[in-house]
Length: 487
Image (cartoon, rainbow, N blue to C red; front, side, top):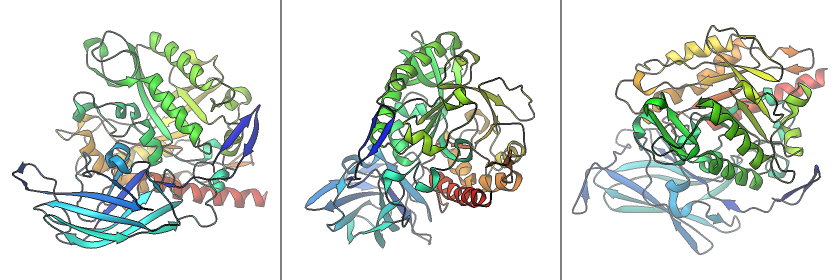
């Protein structure tokens, strides 16, 4: 689809995009022997594990994914695995003609066999999918070829030109009514970095996270030219940079430019940038403001949303899309007060009370650094406390902990436990935060933002964070429409 914005006037032309592969989803069968271990070593063509690779063909053209692999413990029984961007090599952005047959060949190598139920091919959105049934166990050097079927997952809602964050039904939702799926320390996906086990919270870069469906980006930043690996305003992660305990992962300007390019190509999408962990704020915040204004300050491209600072009210997603002001920015620093497109975030920790300042937003956080134990269930207690509050503008649920609170597990290993709690967390908030009307005119919902480490690590849950947030937003949209009719 092509959309053009001229002097605030919105013009839409016909959606003309082919099916463009951005994600590959695999489902391991839930039966004994279906799981498969990764190889620990290769020796003269022999390995002690198994690997998968796919070839996708359409209209006499083919792509190869390379060996499908992430830091996650892939191919467990009943597990869903996602591969995005660089993880699918030549198949990333491979175009499929839906009028032609799409075939997929699954290749297996190694001495450990496994069985997949299906492989799904996804575009950047979630309204359609191409399903390739497998239902066969492969072992050693074997393969299976199947034909795939195109399916629309949201019947009657497939016109992307009318969307707001994945559905036309979301356009009437106020910014505070929408649930944004989020990535914690999203900037750590920009490069490999050092000490990945301790400091890297994402294995996808910003473009790949957007393709996956993430719409809230939690970002730690620093301005430094003296720390190793830091070259000015950088995304990062760590504590006490004055002692050198900090890891830079890439320049903020580069990341934001990639974000802008993606948003310009996908004019129905609204995102949130949240700059909370700020080191050396005296230098960092002015540098951040400058780059935000430079990249999102123009009239013809996607811009910062200034409605709240100008009117005291949050716009609907539809208004943000219509005006092309689709970037909402929160910064946890008081010096951003004068800038219309940047909202000061006042963080409310558990049990803490803060005074709200004009133009600022009180955001309740559920985060607590604590040992996750066997199942990370302690975070549900914090979810309960955060969603019980009535003094916050918005609720942010953080389903993760700090590395040193977990023992020796890497951050991606902890994500396997905590990422299973998304559905329970949403349900807890729904039970504690009934849809009360705001001055008789709006329904209120919580949570507003939900953050994970490695949100593409779904494990054996039926749905991932993006799918669960989409499901919840459809529920909210239905309630909102019914409420407006009743007024």
